[in-house]
Length: 105
Image (cartoon, rainbow, N blue to C red):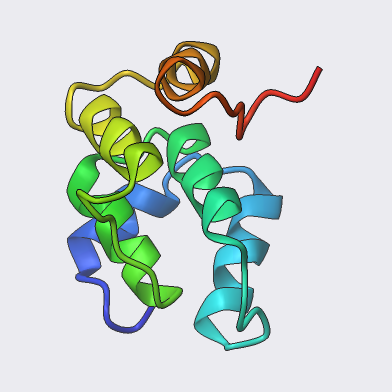
């Protein structure tokens, strides 16, 4: 978390569950060196991150959002407009790709 601005860190950490804080600490301490991108995207949605915050978190993990990826494009649009409904996001991805990355039935 050292590269994150103090304001962002304060806002991000305020009222977050301890398990998310542990997860973020493990990322910052490089204890989590690899995390599947789809899992990182799910955390971005679950934490209600803004698009810039999600981009920063993904960058910390070595990922970036790509316009070439339908999943990335849909998640980006949803974060940009404050849509954090994982079922709605999953349905949009399912309609475009035929795959359901977040909701497993």
